[in-house]
Length: 386
Image (cartoon, rainbow, N blue to C red; front, side):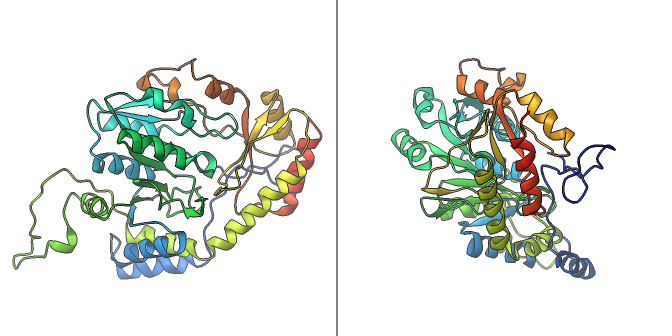
């Protein structure tokens, strides 16, 4: 997804606080990042090194991720999770269509088939009640996509997986800092995949992480993220070559120290930024109660969303989008259901809640640069109607 940068308002439109168009997203870069990255440049060691290890250690200690392996993208994390899970040609993976194409395209890349289950209209997440009847002898995994940062019903999903001997892969691209029943996302499922792309909560410019709960699988993740070579146990010989013997296919998916320096800087104050984000969400909820034609998504008390998005359902959505745009406020569906793509088999009308979600979901600005005054402005614009 491309970054969205502020654009000047057209003359005569009411200006939001700050006088600029309010974008849906804004990239956060910590003030210390410039110095941290400059120090890496001065060393001239730009590839994977000690800063990647430090970044991984802080992901574990501060965000509760288990065995996090820092990678060059969230898509790489999804692909590597599928590979390490042993999913390949002829296999099937059940997931929700409400996601970005990366979730399903990585399934196709390993030769498997994405099988779409319907979603909960109230959250955008996969509906556990629509999973079990889709399981066949070819099903190998369930991929749980936490839409907008709100955790799926992991207890129900894991119970289904346990009954049928399936692997659970969390697509947590939107979810660093989220929790489910007191557990951090990144510590629950067999595999959890994060994205540190530019407009995510925590960015390394572009990057990701893969958590494998089982220590043996975690070791395989670390080995296969760099061509399948176990760096820790492949010493350099006297003529300058590493001593190794490849046993399976690996990839060049590791993060660089250059990117890790930005990630380390952006981890500073992460909890404080998340607290502010939650405050903005609470402000939106308080100001958008009982708005005609607007229905909020539901949030269960046993989980804490990472709040990457603030979304809800609206009637007359195009009129809503135009009304906000005329007042200098961005809004977007972010993604419609991806099952419409020919590569994935084409749109499935039987996924009735997904089709309804496609027609009514919308998201408004929520990011680190958003001020309380700007939130009040957005609330006022929406309460004026559309």
